[in-house]
Amino acid sequence: MNTRNLFFRHMAQTSSFPVALEIERASGVYMFGYDGKKYLDLISGISVSALGHLHPAVTEAVRNQLEKYMHLMVYGEFIQEEQVALAAMLTGCLPESLDNVYLVNSGSEAIEGALKLAKRYTGRSELVAFRNAYHGSSHGALSITGNEKLKQAFRPLLPDVTHIRYNEPADLTVISKKTACVVAETIQGEAGAIVPDNDWLIALRKRCDDTGSLLILDEIQVGMGRTGTLWAFESSGIVPDILVLAKGFGGGLPLGAFIANRQIMACLTDNPVLGHITTFGGNALCAAAARASLGVVLDEELWKNAARMEQLLRAELHHPAIKNVRGRGLLLALELESFEKTQKMMQLCIARGLVTDWFLFADNCIRIAPPLIITDTQIREATGILLECLDQI
Ligand SMILES: Cc1ncc(COP(=O)(O)O)c(C=O)c1O
Image 1: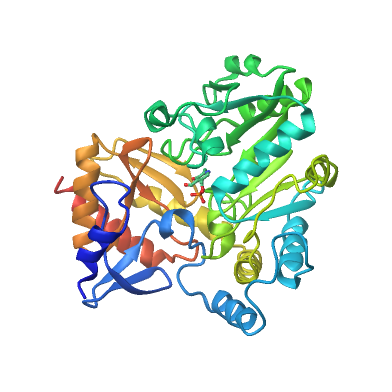
Image 2: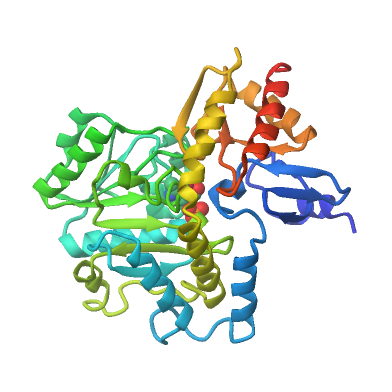
C-alpha cells in the first residue's frame, strides 16, 4: 500500500500544498518518520500537544478510562466521573465567576456554544469581533473570523456582525447596548501572535460592563500555560464572562469547552430545553486525557517554563533575515520578508529535522509553538537549525 498516493487520492485536501510529512510515531517533543528520521516538533500540532507526544500521565489516564467505557450517553445526561472531575479541576484554577463548564468537541463548537449563550442571555443579536481574528471554520465561528478572503465564498453568514480593529481603543465605541457579546482572542494567534496592550484589554472589559455586553475570550490557542501564565488574560487582570478553550485543553484528544458563571450558563437549560446538544462533547477518553494533562501543567507550573523558553528563544534568534519577533511565551512569530521566504524556510527546516509552520493571516511569519515541556537543550537545537536555514533563504 502506498499511503502517500492514497492520501492524495482519497482524502479531502485542504490546500494544494499540504506538508505531507509521513510520521510513524511521536514521543515528547520529537516525531519520527517511517525511515527513522527524527523531527523536532516546533508547532505541537498547532498548539495542541502541550505536554509533548504520548506523555505517560496522559496515556495512563486514557488507558485506565478505556478499561471502563468509551461512550455512554450524549453530553449532560449521565454523571460521568472524568467529566465531573475535569470540570471541578478546571474551575478550581479559574477566577471564581467562571464556575460552570460546558464540554464540547472542538474549538469551533465551543465558539458556537459561547455565541449562542451570549445571544440567549442578553436577548441581543449583535456580535462584535476583530479584524484578523480566527475563531474556527463552522458558519458561526467563520462569521466572527476577521478575514474576508476566507469568508467571502461562504456568504451569507451570520447577520449583525461588526469587525473592529484589534488593540485600537477608539473602535471600542462601536460596542453598544445592542451588542450581545464581544469575542476576542486574548492574544491573536493566526494574525501572527499579536499581543494587545493590557490597557486596551482593561478598556475592552470596561466597555462591555458599561454596555451590558458579554466579553468572550477565546483562549483556544493561548490558554493552558502557553503564553507564560496559565491563562493569557491573567496578565491584564481582567476576567471574561465566557472563556473558550480547546486545542491543548484536550491533552492531545479532541475536546473544547466554554466556561461561564452558573447563572449565565443556566440559559441553555430551558426555553428551549436542550439549547445546545452535543453527542460526543466531553467524551470520557478525552475528559480523562484533559484532566491528566491539566494536572501535569498545574503540578509542574509549565507556564513558567514557557516564559523561560521565550527568553532563551529571543536571546538566540538574531539574524538579518528576521524582521521582528512577536508573541508571548511559547507562541512566537518570526517575521520574514515574504510568504516565499517562509515556505522556503519550512522546507529547509524539515529537511534538517525541524517542523515549523506559518500563520493563516500572517504568511510571512514562522510559527514557534513547541510543547511546553521543551528544554533549554532542545530550544538550542531548534534555534541552531533555524539560524542555519535563515542563512539560506
Ligand atoms: C483562536 C482559535 N479559535 C478557534 C479555533 C478553532 O478551533 P478548532 O479547529 O478546534 O475548531 C482555532 C483553531 O486554530 C483558534 O486558533
